[in-house]
Image 1 (cartoon, rainbow, N blue to C red):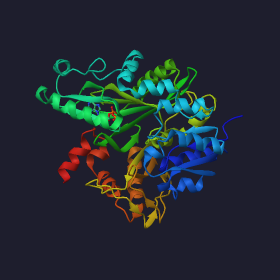
Image 2 (image 1 turned 135 degrees about the vertical axis):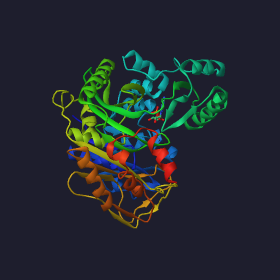
Image 3 (image 1 turned 90 degrees about the vertical axis):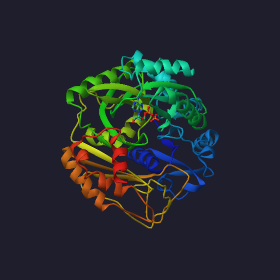
Image 4 (image 1 turned 120 degrees about the vertical axis):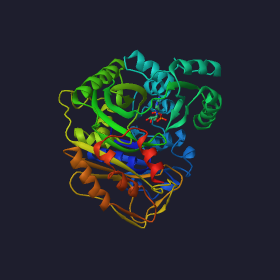
Length: 448
Ligand code: ADP
């Protein structure tokens, strides 16, 4: 018997996204939610709903016992963790499997290895992926750090082994600043992840962020679904993503894609994964692997025609990959804008009641969002409230459609990032695709 009821251990747009894929497959859904999310759209649409705790995520969306109990009382036979929260928690994945519930995610051992960025880099190196030059593993001694930094050359970046979401990272311009900046990064890492293990990397001057989507069946077969360019960032957080990357040729895609797919096949990787690289002067440098579905997965869906959540569910159910590398084709261009409930230029959070909501539509326009008029955006969680994804046969066509779609989006009652995106898509560098991970912050500074 295959999966018949999936518990969605998440909230917001991704919970709705998972619900949709499940229902299209004839699978029932169980929403688990905090008291703050009782009125959420995915809770309304799910077949079953269980309140698992108060607003605080530690007591609800991160509460293992409450989630497992909800799965048991509702007879869910699988758990999809979405992104964030439990998605990269290997211990949680172990517990889910120990309860005889299918984990819609990678093997816990792979989550564990890749969740430690020092281990991840070692593994990636051993699998033949090119790395950012840096310390050979973790370093804790400041003298040794200075020696390594002199060797690779300043600036360097100190990164937390347990890091994520752009936290626990500091750029170090020179030797005299090293100790104080590393201590700051360590404090941040300690409070965010409970682990202040650090490593050093060469700080690349002006790279792009290019990541490859991979899928494995867990039995030694793996494919890649091309790359996404996520170079438009603020504070190491993605704002706008596109696929394919404006700078990657089909030959490069094939070459790097085969390299990462082969690496995943060698590992026996199961499910969806993303291998992140920095790209500078035509060279790729591995930075980390995410063992989950990414926020920006819809741009890959748009250019491949594949439903990545459906694929995840099929693999968790023991089915083979639904396509071979040869069958998989890339068509056209897709862009995603992340829409947050915040001031578009100061980025101050703006939770509250949505008084009016109208989403863009029309050909090749997709909005992933749980918003509706009258919904109150709670202040306790991530500020992302919607994703606008637009497809076009060419990048130029995609940008034109995106302009039109952004004009149609109306969210009233709270401030959102829509005005930011509206300005961005008129910038010559965005139109030409000539931007790096530094571009947005520099542009924001000039604009201010
Ligand atoms: P996290 O897991 O916190 O997202 P990553 O290692 O994926 O951290 O890095 C996030 C972002 O930080 C990258 O997309 C890039 O913008 C920047 N970054 C990370 N490492 C480097 C580096 N060695 N040189 C320059 N920028 C970097």
